[in-house]
Image (cartoon, rainbow, N blue to C red; front, side, top):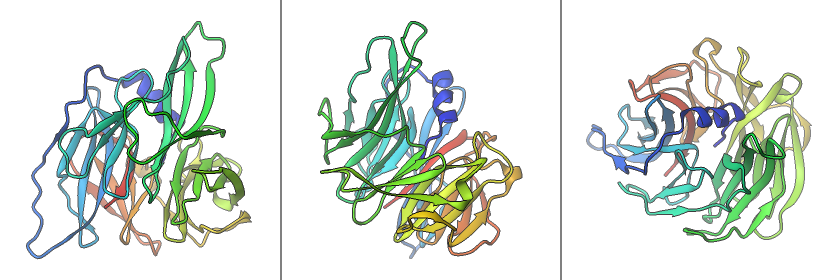
Length: 326
C-alpha cells in the first residue's frame, strides 16, 4: 500500500482535469464451481488516463481479466475490510479522497482533506484502512514558486470509519512522509520510513511510536519503499532509492524490533523493472511492473523464493500502485 516520492512527482506532470467518470465493467470469465476469494487492485496511468483496475482472485489464483475499472483515481490506494476502494482524486489540488463501496460503479462518497495554505498543493504519499475501518492518510504540501518553503510536511491524518465530505480527522500523527503503510490485527500502524519501519501502537486514540524495525535488506543504499502486513508477517519492498537492479520483497516477523534479518527474501527480476509496491492475497504475493504500457504484474508464492508468474493484462497503462482486499 505504498506510494513513492517518484510517483508523487509523476502526479504533478500527468494529472488530468475533469470529474470522476465512475467504474466500468470488464468482461471476466470465472470458471463454474469456482469462488472469488479476494480482489487485487492495481492503479495504472497512461498519458490520457489514471484508473484503478480490480482483478477477482478465484480460488487463490488471479483471474486474468479485470471486472472493474475505476476511472480517474490515482495512487495511493487502499482497500477497506468491507472491500471498499479508497484512492486520490486525479487532478485535485489537494489529493482529496474518493471512496467506492464494494462492487459499486459510482463513488459512494468523497472525503475532503484539510485545505493547504495559500501557494501550496496537497499530495498523499500512502494510505491504509485498518480492520475497524479507520483511514490513515500520509499527506504533505508542496509549494508553488512563490511559497516560502518548497515542502511542508503535514503528517498522517486519522479518520473515523465512514468519514465523508468535510469531516475533520480525529487527529494528525506527526511523522515524516510515509513511503507505505499498513496495519496489523491489533490496529498497530506500520510505516515505511526510508531505512526503518516505524510501528505506532494505538494510533487511533493515543499514537505512540512503540518500536523501530531496522531490516538488513533496507539499509545503506536500499530503502523500504512499500510494505504490507499479512497475519504475523511484514512484507517490505526494498531496493535502491529511485529504482535499481537489486530490488527484493523481504518477509520479516511483524513483532520484530531493532536490527533484524528477514525470515526470507524473494529476489525480484530486475530486468522487468518492478514497481515500488507490494500486495498479498491468499498465497499470492503481487508486485506491479513499471516501464510498460500494460497492466502487468508479477505473482509469487509468498512462502517460497520460486520463479514468478508474469501476468500481462494488455494496454491498460503503466501500473504504479497495488492493494489487495476482500
